[in-house]
Amino acid sequence: MTSVSIIIPMKNESENVDALVTEIAQACATLDAYEIIIIDDGSTDDTAAKIRALKAAHPTLRLLQHPNSGGQSAGVHSGVLAAKGQVICTLDGDGQNPPAELPKLFTPLLNDKTGRLGLVAGQRVDRQDTASKKIASKLANGLRARLLKDGTRDTGCGLKGFRRDAFLRLPYFDHMHRYLPALFKRDGWEIALVDVSHRERQGGTSKYSNLQRALVGIYDLIGVAWLIRRRKKAQPTEADLSTGASDV
View 1 (cartoon, helix red, strand yellow):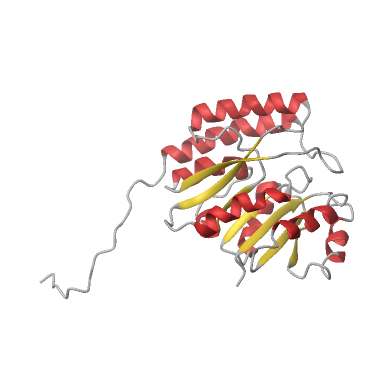
View 2: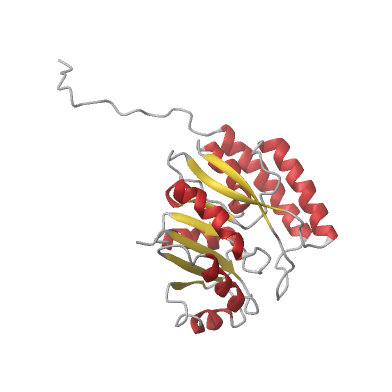
């Protein structure tokens, strides 16, 4: 039985496929069973061909394809729907999230005895990004933290681990991957935060500008705040029907 599914959305990341899959396999070597699911999100380069070429060396590798680009959240959602593992780990396809950090995500979830841990979220330290990207990220994270009170300083980190069943009960919307701590807390799950390393992009180019992130972030932040306020507050408990008592 597959215990962990590693999900990586990719768009035009052919330069990063080989190294990323190899490093993921090394990081997951201690697991009894795992799978790697790459979602080719409408790539126009040879990303898919590179993935297919790796199948012989990595039998648990799977490829999903979006004919048109749907974005990172759409890729993660498609991967989770197809996943066989009950624990999901995600990382970005640009190589900036070191796969060696994956055990920090799946180990707490696999060892959880309480049944209450829903999400383990990575928080980047010593970020290897441009100064403008780091400033924009810091401002966005500060605003988000004040409004949503989700308890994390860095929701933009692609390294996240979570329960598959809990994720699939979340409301889906584009860019939801940036708000998983707030959404999991909204549904009553405990979250854990772990520091993870970060490195320079290994190849290719970024798919988003700071302006694009800022514009969609405003609408998303308002929407998530609304979802939190409108969450279901009533929680049922199941009655014991084994006593044979009658309502008559």
